[in-house]
Length: 224
Image (tube, rainbow, N blue to C red; front, top):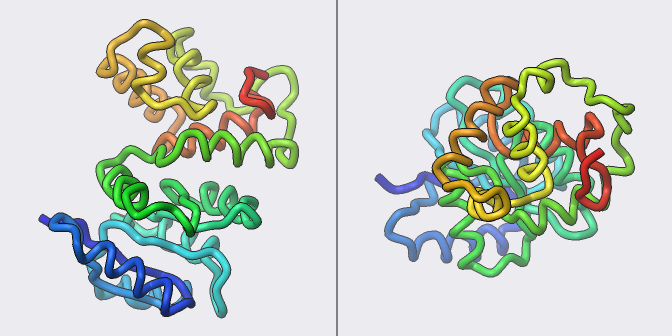
């Protein structure tokens, strides 16, 4: 079954470009479009969507608030935030609102397609290097968290799970973590799943956000 995609952007030309790229893929289908967040929410009430490509700055209702409202709904589609370097702070807000990842608006078509497929399959880390760069830039705006992480459930993690969480927070993929810790990718995936369950998080992006907010990871990608 094709991945059902919704395009949300106030620029018609940009939506047209994305639609042309997606329409050429046998496993994707653009099922809806919207010019702002409010219209997107209205359309989603009657349209089944798997992945939403969400712009940030739009009239009436911006992408961050739209993402928050969409992700709060049961069986919500995955949201992929579209941003530029100048709007990184909005991307971070979008991740906190529940987005499964973010991409730059000028992303090469092949990377955009990979991102959509990754988000649809549940792998929220779309571009680890970009995630790392964004969070390094804006982690200074987050609470320092003190000497110990303030999220009480972090104490429930085993030493290995905490180690894996730190590497996830630094933007490493499962393959990179496996190589770093000399584990199989399947084992790493199991650890990540247990981390999500114990911390009550939806996906890897929320792990990254939590690690920076609690001070578990500092600017520069190092442990706190």
